[in-house]
Length: 369
Ligand code: NAD
Image (tube, rainbow, N blue to C red; front, side, top):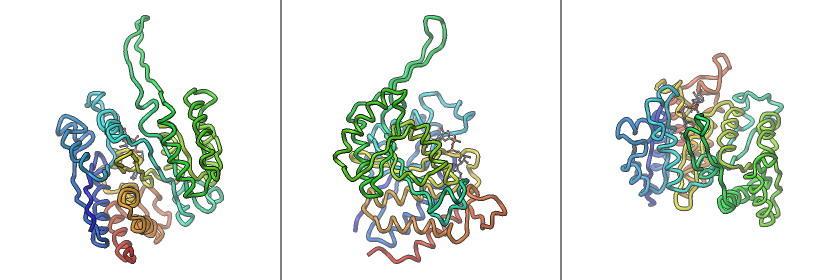
């Protein structure tokens, strides 16, 4: 019997609602497999700031340090509510980036996936979707502009100014690029390298490193695409992409566009890999506009469970079962409100109903051997 410690950081906004559905899946996976999960709930984000005075409290750090894997819900507040928190204590700066730094989670994997049978959820035309969308965006997660030095002040002309630094060394680029090549080897052996080398020197170095590593993976075809062109191509011809690799900020923005072409950010789970520990999270934010209404789509959080099962616990078969269970719920004609408009010919279900149906579908599947 394997035993794993999991730190569960529910987060803000819709976080607790979608985390509840993830826990249902963990419980069923325990029943179906020779495994136990010790799940510890921890404060993290804006709620933690108001309760404990810090968005990433020491108690949470200690639980995360001791955990085999971490799963976190989205954090953050509406723009107006965020102003009630000092700038450096606001959730991303005070909790999310420090967690990424603490566990050095340099590679972020964001599947952008929609089977052909669910093409009706996408705003793209069926002829553009073709056989479905199946992309993994690999985003560098602990470098670049988001982690560079920051300075604010007043300059000699008396004008307020800000300076933020975009810095990468070749080691930071190389380790995430290797991850992307390895993933390409397990998939279609086509790697799109996303850059902006016509403007940014950081992209020039990035591309040099990609070219230097490419001969180690001779079967992988590398295609270089400017990030602005990639944004257009994701809408016009997403089928050309399989694995895409990019620096931190490009990945932040393009992966939200990934959610857009699927039909909702609610379909976007992710895994964040570090040398010793990984954490898992929906790619989206805390959706304050729908928080507390039981209408959020928990696919992103349950998908993060599926990624954890495979990547942290080696439970690949059960992970596939969880993905299949989620897709079967949609395949049977159900939809969460983010994905369909009333009258679209689907039966609308809430957050908890989706979780219950996933659990029902998973329970009906043969247990892994
Ligand atoms: P958001 O991603 O929270 O929401 C954008 C839109 O997508 C909203 O209309 C929302 O209702 C919808 N949406 C997102 N997830 C959904 C789900 N699971 N089901 C149904 N609909 C969903 O972006 P935002 O509104 O710009 O940001 C809200 C807060 O989240 C901000 O404080 C922001 O800083 C924070 N944020 C946190 C993370 C993170 O925790 N990793 C990431 C992005 C944004």
